[in-house]
Image (cartoon, rainbow, N blue to C red):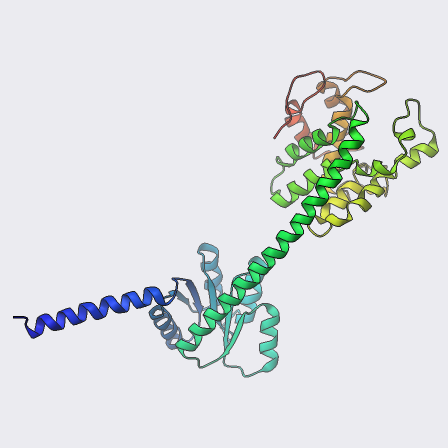
Length: 364
């Protein structure tokens, strides 16, 4: 016969298991960072939100919160506005500088419409007046995270649509480059090689981001696109160009920048790279005569890569020269035509670049 103690133990076991199951199903185990200087309110939120199924870390000030955010991953921040030292709104601005998508719930005892509006402008997803019950805070956490997830999903759809347009545009423009180069056996695959050389050198520069590398690749790939606007009679002329014809050729960088305007939103640096790819370190280049570090980095890399490929490729008036000859010319031009800070990078990598006098393959 079952005893009363046995029945009580069974009841406690079933109740405990049921509560654990309820908590596991009630809410996903999101990581919540609570920033609250009031110890009682902090303890209440930590315990209450934990019971709601959240994994909670609670700290008393913004500095500690920033430190935890740098070391750990959180799904939402719940912060008091009136924190000691750095206020909650300043914490929010710090977070938004590094993470535009982390949900943020602001708690405040200040019944001020201007404060609420400013918090939302700064990037808060939800704004609550204190005192607030744990259930109410949990509801606002759920709302903030849902709204932010939808915003991220919508932004991703827009970005994917934009990138689809960019890819279609790049495909069309590359077809134009290919048609331009296949008409001249001496420049066939020139843009592809210049892009590979420029990117290889760029990877040796500390701190380069994927976006910068990508823009340099695209800019180098399309650096001659503006020649589409130059008459073929001038481009393929075997004799010396007249001053007027040379002035016409020099317009190709301006034409190229205009053609690439549709890329300005996704790859804003590409237009500048193409416009300034014939600028010289000493300011004697074209079209604008800019000098030194005012020339985009991608343009300075292309100047070296373009020169190397021109020297190491066959031309109507001469055969290709070896890579060592290109090295000597580029070294002599350091500080005048070429960025003297990039020439050592070229020296360290140029043997990886193919030359018509060698059998090397393109760097990846």
